[in-house]
Image 1 (tube, rainbow, N blue to C red):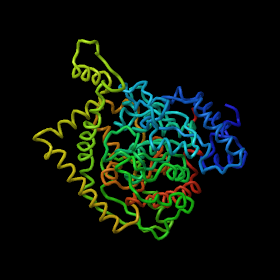
Image 2: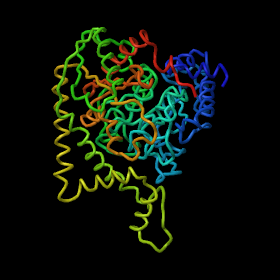
Image 3: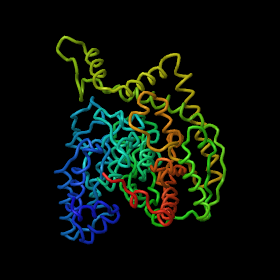
Image 4: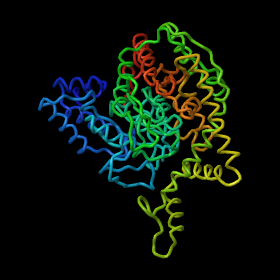
Length: 501
C-alpha cells in the first residue's frame, strides 16, 4: 500500500468525514484506499464474504458529486463501512453465513441498509459471521473462520467476527453487527474495538434475517466511541415496518460522546460478574478500570443481582426456541438452496434433504433444542420457566438502576481463544457470553470498549458498560470519558499498538 493509503485507513470515521466535507480528501480516494487494504490483507483475515467494489465506488462518486454541487453532506458521508451479512442488500448476496442461502440476492434493502445509503455511508461489502448468528467465534460460518488481526490463530469473536476483524485490520473504519447474546460486544472486546448493543427496538430489524426475535438487535461497531455514536445516530429510529420498533426519539448519543464525563455518576459493579472461569488478566484490567472511574469522579456501588447466575441457562432455552420457529421458513421450496428435487420426492422429503445439506451442526443443535423445549409436555417446564427467569433478571436490573446510573463489568471472561479450542465443547463456547447475555434478556443497552491488554497474552480486554433502556446516551458519556482517560494514560490499544498483518 502507498503511504497515502496507510494514512487514510488509520483515520477515524469522524476525521474521514471532516476531510471529505472540507475537500481535503475525496470519497473515491477513501474508498479506494480501503479496497486496496482489503485486497492486501483479507486473504489472511477472511473478514469479508462479499466485496462490492463497483457498488462502493459508485456510492463514493455520488458523494463527491454532491460536495462539488455544494450540497451539505451528512456527518458520515463518504465513510466506508463493513456490513454484517445478516442484513438484506438489494442486488448483492445475503447469506447469513449459511449454505442454505448461498448465492441468494435479495430484491430489497433492510431498513438499516436504506438508512446507511441515505446517509451516504459507503458500503464496502458483507462480512463473515457464525451461521444465522449462532456462535461466539465465527467458526460456525459455512464459509470458513475469520482470524483475529491481533493473532490470526485466534478467534475474532462471534457471531459478528467479520465486522470486528474488518475494523481491527483497518479494512473499514465502521461496521455493523447484531447482538442476540453478545455478538456485537464480545467481538469488540477480543479485537480491541468498540461495539454497542442499543436498547432493544431502537434499531429496526426489518430486513435483518431473524435468529431470536425477542433478543436480536443491530448496532454500531467502530474503533472509537465517537465513531460508534455517529453511526448509532444514523441507523437508529422508529420504523413502522418493524412491529418491535420503539416509537421514541433517539437519545443524544453524539452529544454524549463529545462531552464524556462520569463526575458525580453512580457506577455499579455486580458481584456475579467475576469468579471462577475469569482470566486473571481480564479481572486485573477490569479492576484498574473501576479505579480509573473512581479517579474520574464516579461513585462505585457494589450490586447483588442473583438471577444473573441463571441467565445463561434461560438464554439457551429462549434463543433456540425462537430460532426453531424462525428457521422453519427455510424449507427449500420458496428461495435459497433446494436439494433432492428430482421429481420423485415429496415436498417434505425435499425440505428434509435441503435442511440436512444447508444447515451446519450448530444450527441443527439449536433447532433441535428449541423444538424440544417448545414441544407438548415440555413447554412450561423449559421455555415457560426460562421466561420467568427472564422476568427476574429484568427486575434485578430495575432494582440495580434505582441505585446506579450505569453498571460496568468485564465484557468477556477471557481474551480471544485459539481457533478450534472450543469447537467440540459447546458449553465452553457458550460461556464466552456469560457477561453479555443478561442485557439481551432485559432489553437494556450496553457497550464494550477497550480497557487495555491482558498481561499474560498481550491480547485486548473489553470493559462493558450497561445502561437502562432508552438511556443509550449514558453509554457514550461514560465510554467517552473512559476512552479519553485510557488514551491519555496508556494510548489507544488499537490505534497505538495495532497488530501488523
